[in-house]
Length: 319
Length: 265
Image 1 (cartoon, each protein chain N blue to C red):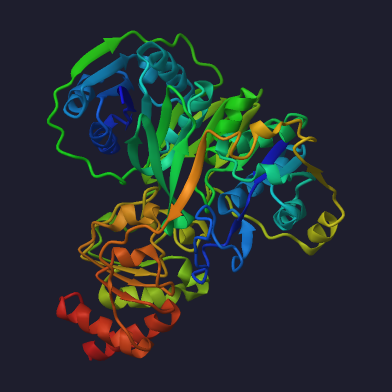
Image 2: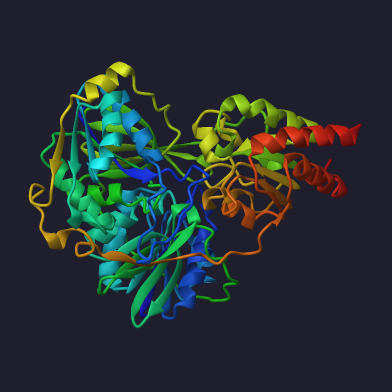
């Protein structure tokens, strides 16, 4: 492995944690790790990234003040052609997914997305991906090439300590203009009555609820133990709970003392948002549901049968 | 506003009774007990396409890569308001990665006059989330991924909202023609009416094989792919929860006891 490019991700003036995960993974593969930072006024970011990279390649230009997939693709293409890395790693995030596949095809680079593991065998990368909601893994092999690209799942690789002090190299913006697409603004998610990131106790529901007419029993249980109600993406998409109650990558990250996961399978998008809870208890019909890997206690049963019984038992206890 | 919407048929893994077992080849899963549904994100893409048609006129073309069994999800999209459909079906397509799949889709779409191509942002089975973005590159048009809102600004421009981590929306202006990969939750997918279902049963689903798509064997399947899934495995599992055994009354009693002991009730 020669040089590895790792695309840096930032938004709204913040360098995201995923950067250090990818740089840590790249550092384990051997070879020179170059963090590629496209931004505007980003000396501070460059300094932080240098702690995890052998080199930080910086294009500092107002064009990159905000993310634009078309501008990113053009700049990365030019930088890759110039520096000739062997591997390009991009966070498999809302930004990264928007640029990886098109860039890889334009550069004729074998690629895959959303990897959770990566090794070098011989001189070629071999990737691990999850399938069927994390129930099985798959080994991905690639066609022979000079250049490979990988989208790496956020949260899949714990960030290390860093401890490097890479050189920071500024280069001119290789992109003169961008056509077809323009950043307009960010719209913040709506703020509701309850801020679940501050909740001490959460009763959280997923698809196992089956119908929204079953929601009152969840609300009764929550009220009984002084918890707030939250949910998975599926129940929010279905309109059973408002958006601000969604736990997970695209919702909120919560850290309650108790997280009672009812009928939630535990896909990584959800788990990312709740694995910091002190105590996780899961009730799910599927004994193989990944949520049981994150729970201290589990009940393999239909939540619609257990919740009414639990309400009765807690009422009895309270007297 | 003409829209092409790409739909995929996937196993209904939201059903907790759906168990995933690796088959004897190690490269597939036992599908005999699966029930199949339209991919969740594709369902939202179909709704978005029909909403645009209702607002601005035009036609919605449904495109699928799949076997005859996929007619079920195609017909449902037609019943909801799709006008015509193309199904790409050839055994040589098996094993296609997102690049080969995008190439197959492009072969059908290139002869359809359209302003927007929509795909779901992610398939619930293999989860690559790459086909739409790859397709845009092959078509040479702009794209946007994880799209939750679509507004026509006229003058061949759209204002779209991309969902980022934490639910932040990135508002973007994009020129048409373009490819949008649609995220779940941005609309409320309708149910098909009986009238719609009856009419859909009469609509033709055009079927194209490798030759009809104008493709060669080395452009599709594993041969046409840049990455190949060679072996499935069962993931290593960390420490599992302590499972409370018994009927609902017993498990609920044990759980209530644990919560009390920890001072949580």
